[in-house]
Amino acid sequence: MLRQFFAYYAPYRGLFLLDFGCAVLAGLLELGFPIAVKFYVDELLPGGDWGWIIAAAVGLLIVYLLNTGLMAVVTYWGHMLGVNIETEMRRRSFDHLQKLSFRFYDENKTGHLVGRVTKDLEEIGEIAHHGPEDLFIAIMTFIGAFLLMMWVNVDLALLTAAVVPPIMWVATHYGKRMAGNWDALYGRVGDFNVRIEENVGGMRVVQAFANEDHERRLFARDNDRYRSTKLAAYKIMAASMSLNYMSIRLIQLVVLIAGAYLVLNEQLSYGGFVGFLLLVGVFVRPIEKINAVIELYPKGIAGFRRYLDLLSTEPDIADRPGARPAPRLAGNIRFREVSFSYGSRPVLDRVSFEIGAGETVAIVGPSGAGKTTLCSLLPRFYDVDGGAITVDGIDIRDMTLASLRGQIGIVQQDMFLFGGTIRENIAYGRLGATEPEIIEAARRARLMDLIESLPQGLDTVVGERGVKLSGGQKQRIAIARMFLKDPAILILDEATSALDTETEREIQKALAELSVGRTTLVIAHRLATIRGADRILVVDRGGIAEQGAHDELLGAGGLYRRLHEAQFGS
Ligand code: ADP
Ligand code: MG
Image (cartoon, rainbow, N blue to C red; front, top):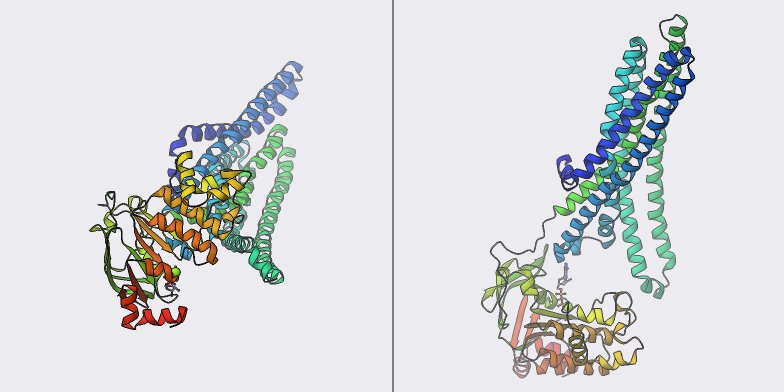
């Protein structure tokens, strides 16, 4: 895992070396200071020469200025390194999300996924900057300070080293618990995000049911869990911090007394004593840093592990190695012995049928029979478990996804619009469409009346998911998209089911125009639509129960007749 992490540094070698070099230099200056003080007290002060004393002050000033510069570099360029790595990881996460299939999104919650691309990576960015440099400098100053302490006085140095074992114990003992805690805390934050996402997204439903109190209770429960997990984390932090503090202060006290004894017995100079005390400070600081490490690292490592998890989630629908871009399709569709299930839930069992290029086929059947599922297999939102689907004789898995999906248009009952303008939403059908093309599509989708009645026209903002538009208006935008997209195969999945009769009739005209020259699959209840189709497929549990023309099927007296009678009377 560490190697995977460091691979992200490769493009920023220059920044890394700059940051690292400056940090090491700053560490060296820190090490040099106590020795300079020792020299100052032992050699310069007794001489009483103001020239030298002022020279020392000037020297110190130069060192301070240098250190200031180093700090600025580390803070800015070091963070630039972290931010660059964070940005790169975020880009990869987002890219990967684009590749994951419907099945993945069926199983994962939006709030969790959003957290992965935002908060998680922020913490990794912090570590990417501070991690290696902190660790290296901690080790460097720790060893360096110890060697210098040995040089000043061996006995005192060995005495001081006694502080190391208890601090190490605190680090390992609490470090593990802290890591577990950050993992738990992350889970809580994820639950939070999901809860808030669903609540805010579904606020209209919440208020329509007057269930605000219920929502408040659910949220309070999550909020409380988060609170207790966080408090547990701070308890660990408090324990480890105070134990460390106590160990460090105790050892300083011991040095103070032992050092005084050595000075009084003339085994240690005054300068050596002061310098040693300062060195103890430098020596324990990296150990104190371990505390920060205990807190920050597990957090970042947990985040990095989740990042790797996401990136290693293989998309279950992707281009096959040999896949080729599909030619311009005529739209001759064939299902051959197609079986499909959602996990352990079988929906289609060896379904076979054929639809000719340009044909319009109505798909009818009871709710939950698998009509939508049947249509989702065609653009490969899900892959068949058995059998095959071909278009113009080519297995759809031998075409690239982009070229296949580029030639299939879907209008569903509940269209998802993006939060931008009407123009942007129409142009989503074909990015880069020109203004006249967009207007032509809007005209054919019978949208011009609406657009002309709006003060902002095409630039009217539709609100999140199109909340500022009526169902019929959203549907017309969806149809305009299709005119721009110009697919060979059109799937209309209860496109007008949610609309009132008047609007439905209007939109039906646009849909009729849209389906000209395309293979069209219409999932519908409306008699006129069904009758207008060239053929009717009747879907029941597991597959196709019947197929044929309206009159034929009525005459056959099977499922179609029963559905028909239930809906329209006999
Ligand atoms: P229809 O469109 O005919 O009403 P669907 O094709 O939507 O029916 O659904 C067929 C069956 O598959 C239903 O029992 C439904 O509950 C189930 N189903 C639909 N979508 C999913 C999904 N994403 N995951 C699991 N089961 C699903
Ligand atoms: Mg359906």
